[in-house]
View: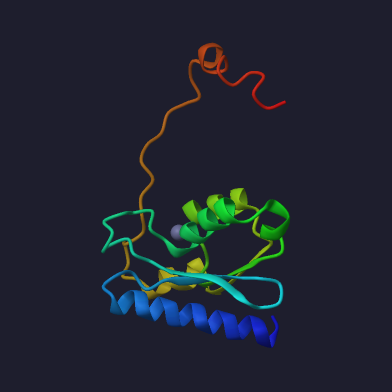
Length: 142
Ligand SMILES: [Zn+2]
């Protein structure tokens, strides 16, 4: 991790503090170009927006996929105050960002939460109805 990485990571931590000050969960992220220029910043707004997907990492991944061509997206780095959750990690992978640098790990975050506050996965069933479900998919990925 370079000095510039630490500078940008500290900015993400400042964004996390400002999210908390605004009444939201304490997470912040930014996207930087390869020369360290900040392209866009985001804060968690999941409480004030009443939107469970309003994580800063997801907002940045969506912004990159919408506003950057794939070659440019691949040169960017996301700096984020905490390791992206599963939802955001999936969006980041789909957005084509080049790199992610985070401060707190998910495990470290869990250590700062009260016991039993983790999200529980609902029961799931499947796969099922393969012959029917494959019809709209076959031939799409060619
Ligand atoms: Zn997330």
